[in-house]
Length: 187
Image (cartoon, rainbow, N blue to C red; front, side, top):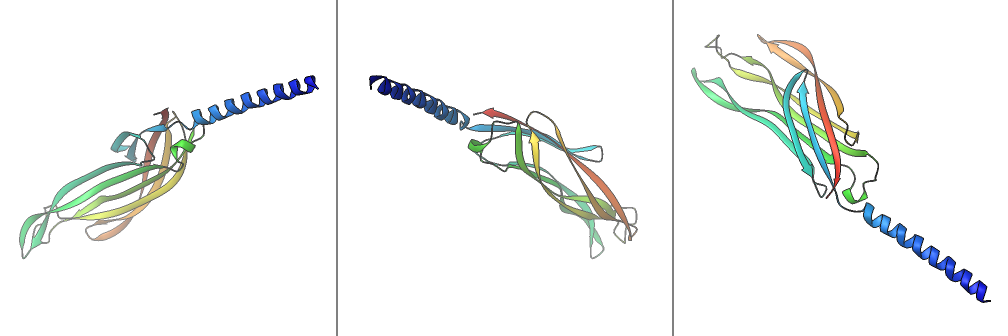
């Protein structure tokens, strides 16, 4: 009988030890994680904007490259400068809560790019040599991506717009590249 009790106690002690180790492993893996996000947005081969930020507590990275410009507009045959905004807003959001991110090197993110670009200008009718009202092209791109931590990922997306030159529409194609690098680190 003593041998049986001793064997049961030994098995119970081993099970308790393994259970405590497993619980300790769970606690370590649920430590807060921060994401270091950096990247750049290119139109064809031209750099539009770059960004870098550390995301904590599930907050998305928000980057803006908005420019306030002016164009010459007619108002009762008087040419005056008018303001307009153009550029891009970029959002990179983690799809999983940080404390539930697995220990692998993959990170799932939602990427959204919203922009308005100038494709051409129409000169005021009273001033043929001037720069007039901008012709704007709107862009909205959204995707879910799996990024390998520490490696640069490239997200390509196309767009189509109508270029108006001397009021004659001409379809155009364009290509954007978003370079994205994400690193995980414990907070």
